[in-house]
Length: 388
Ligand code: FNR
Image (cartoon, rainbow, N blue to C red):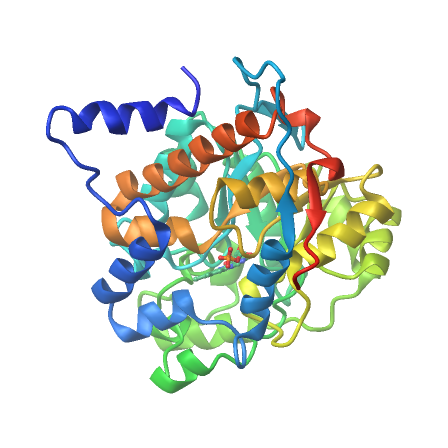
């Protein structure tokens, strides 16, 4: 059984009168999710910073790179397996960290983590999750999982999050660098909606022993006091490269720096000795008018691709996009908003389908472009379009 069998299975079911339960086309899935959710939650999921031009740039950067298929090569069996951050995965794909997933579905992260685990790909638990990292770990079972740290103001709290993640069996620490402050997000501002102020997405803080020790009254007795402390702890714009040394001392897990876009920052990350650079612009949610993330990957890959493991997200909307990013040096590719659309429309099954469909399209594109192994993909598989 390969990933492409997902396609055979859909056609086979068609012969018995069964149609797919949810839209196959992600544009339709997105539209269905948008109609299902209330304006506040939908705006939070869909929105980006400012005029949302970075979000557009992410897509433009992907469109500008085009695949050049090769013929007459034996692609009858394919291998998508790859080792990422020390773990062997069936495919170079993961779920990017997304907070407050209960905005999309009552089961939130538990449903998404189960779906990722059923396909053996890593789920990345956000510090801003709506379920505790321990509960998510339990939902993921034996499947590998990563923890994404929003590095809080107090070092003892940061250390506590890291210790909890280690104790709960997370195998990598993804540190997000682009969100020390929230970007200017007109959709959220229009709705005057920030989930954390409504007590959604702060459960990792409210259950943390160090966080609780900083409160006079417990979050259960005084939610407003706990939310106020959350707000103070979340925003931490003082962090610099020098602080990475402290972070390194806190953990033996591989450290991934998420949000890198500049070549010099990528070089600096390599010099700092972290295991991985995660090229991402947070899906355009932080800096409007910034470069498309794939444009950043192209440059960063040339500069440091052979010295570190590059992860990539921002704009991935199908298997062909994944092929482009992998060809340009990504070791693995993160799915962002699309799995949340699946979650909104179909819970855990909806997330499972989004992942399985991306993997099927990735597998088919690999075959149809003349590659039998994911490791054969390199820059020669794509070209920059002249049309842009
Ligand atoms: C995010 N992202 C994010 N990143 C992170 O490091 N921690 C987080 O808690 C969140 N939360 C979050 C919520 C929502 C609703 C979205 C859409 C995104 C960013 C995420 O990891 C990823 O970088 C982007 O989603 C990639 O862009 P696309 O592909 O979704 O456009």
